Amino acid sequence: MVKTRVILIGVGVLLVVLIFLLPKSVVENESQLQGETSTETITGSHAPIPETLRKNIQVLRGQYVANVSNQKNAIFADSLRALYTQAGQFDSAAWFAEQAATFFNTQEGYLKAGNSYYEAYTFAMEPSKQEELAGKTREWLGKVVAADPKNLEAKTKIAMTYMSSASPMQGITLLREVLEQDPKNEFALYNLGMLSVQSGQYDRAIERLEELKAVNPNHIQGALLLGVAYMNQGNKGKAREQFELVKKLDSDPAVQATADSYLQELK
Picture 1 (tube, rainbow, N blue to C red):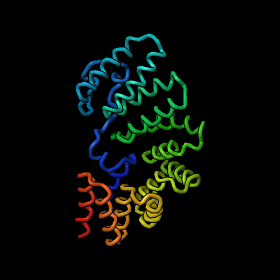
Picture 2: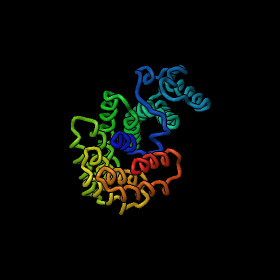
Picture 3: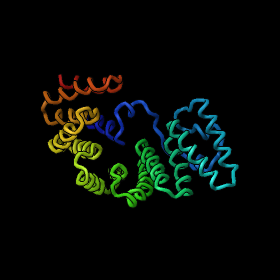
């Protein structure tokens, strides 16, 4: 039970509240990515889109399909990326981001495409979709890192895509490389801590997460995960301190409920 909740708060390195509240988005069909403009295709199996936003998407998709200018289509594609991101349909956002990046061939475009695919990856539920989206993330963010090795955010996202693959150690190696370049990198510290918790290495998890706490005492995810590590280690006092800290740091009902559920288990 504890490990299941840890995975839910950790996957994708999103805030706990996002895990509870954001719609899950998965690439469901090829027709959506070929520019069809029906309402049914736009909503698909995703959460419903607000009417005004849905209409804006329909209009832009119609222009995208009808236009013969590659440059204009690339501009439409970038606009659709932004609208689909706003709608929480990250798979569609990523596909259109890729179309724009392919045309413009700039680092900014590569970064948008890579980040969009990574966001879609974090919400994918099926292993085959995770693998597909992870590969796309590595493809586009790999271009970013190749041009700018100091872009550690892109490197850490690439690292996380390996965690659901057959080569998780490749991701861990990349995260360690990030820490060599930046020992205070919060993303890397948190995720190495999370991976240690998931593998039952609680002492190592506590070491990483205490480092994170020293860097950022208000890191909500880190505080919650540190509490879980102490809880599994058998240190109820330290665990209780962390869960109480989480409640002080974030008043969101979803976060409060998660912390309370752990506190209840400590009684």
